Length: 221
Image 1 (cartoon, rainbow, N blue to C red):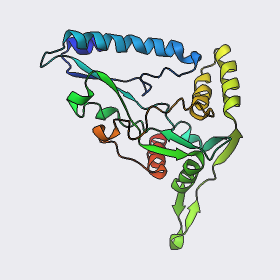
Image 2: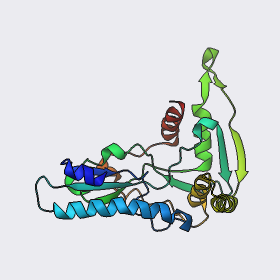
Image 3: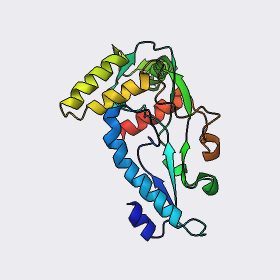
């Protein structure tokens, strides 16, 4: 796709790799996926180098957000790892279209985006609030209770590796959960708000409720 875009005269190519970007701290099980993505990155870099200095030359931008948090929303279930009061940093995936913003500053590099820093408790409260409806008299009426499954990051790691060894595709979600919640690792934190490119890209800070509303809207569509 990168080659085709360059031949077609595309001026800015936005790398679509689900927001992982340059993350050297992923588990080894994700190496094969990362290697395949690097092929596209390398191709984009080479085309950009050929067009360097040209006014209409090929350029690229990658958007790094870390692991997404809006999986399984339609199932009305949530898994809470222990140490659930610890803050977690997450990124909203709806930033891909912003990669062409500030074209000079974002050219030929990965930008890092952060829209929210929150916790499991706050996210659960936001999901429960977002899935209630107003009844007569304005009172809040619960549509359906969220089911809570309590687990640990270590369990997600062990189950994911068993599934990976068996060739079951579901291993990805388990290991992503581990990367998100592994105590003391912060594998999914790509940058603090101050060190990120969020302001440059026009990505504002969001509340847990805002992020949850968007995640549920995508799950329902």
